Amino acid sequence: MPDTPPPRVDLRTDRAHSARVYDYFLGGKTNFPADREAGEQILREWPGSRASARAARAVMHRMVRRLAETHGIRQFLDIGTGIPTEPNLHEVAQRTDPACRVVYVDNDPIVLAHARALLTSSPEGRTAYIDGDLREPGRLLDAPVLHKTLDLDRPVALTLINIVHFMSDEKVLPIVGELVSALPSGSFLALTAGTADSAPERAEIASRRYAEAGIENHLRTRAQVERFFTGLELDDPGVVLINRWHPELGKGPALADHEVMAYAGLARKP
Ligand SMILES: C[S@@+](CC[C@H](N)C(=O)[O-])C[C@H]1O[C@@H](n2cnc3c(N)ncnc32)[C@H](O)[C@@H]1O
Image (cartoon, rainbow, N blue to C red; front, side, top):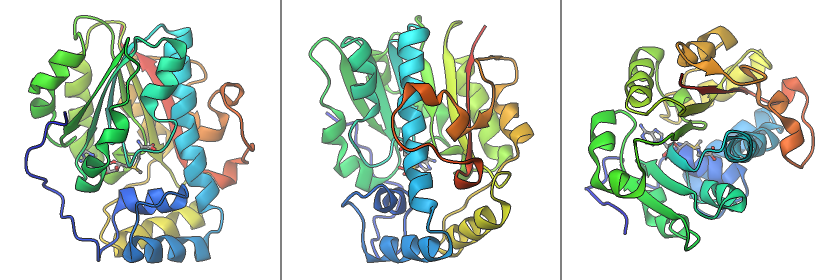
């Protein structure tokens, strides 16, 4: 069952929320008029933002495939999971090995309300959900359900997909460092982060619209994204725009650089 302390994110549906705006872009049904309005505003200014959101989700699938198929990872800690959208991370990982285990974390009560869809593990594997916050790494690392689900003496992939752009470097870099240091050698950090490098004007507009909707967001240069991987061994091809990150591992339309607004990187803890 989900671990359920009181929600710390406002459940208000009259204000746009990042997870629901993203769900709207992905074609989901878990969104409200304020989310659709914020999404439509962004789409009017950049019709490609829907394709960009889908590409942002698709890179998670490819990263999980590479982690499971190439690097033999069988345990995942996914923070900033989002509203469930099939295939979810465990479904991708368990295609490689049904014994894969996944702990999902999100701080949004809407995601919590739909967490059941994340608890559909194969019988050989296991999934769990923590209603938790990236800003409280100590609480996440101490969560009993984390230890019941994952063996922290064996490699774990920490996946931070489309979440770090909601926090400043000052706040998020030490948190990622703390989480990675709690994982054993052979663990991985998989991360994507929003950027304005590929489409500066559009990214700035999207960023402004999120800010106007009350959603804090931070765009990063490639060098800034590389800082997340300090002390780790970057996997091929390094930090690149998401459309360039192992496209051969997924299907779907290829996007040009100017159509995506995020970098992806995967690295191993020595
Ligand atoms: C854009 S969605 C990404 C979802 C998913 N990782 C994906 O790529 O499809 C970002 C998610 O991060 C969650 N989130 C934002 N800040 C968070 C925090 N401080 N702690 C936990 N989750 C957070 C939001 O609730 C949202 O579900």
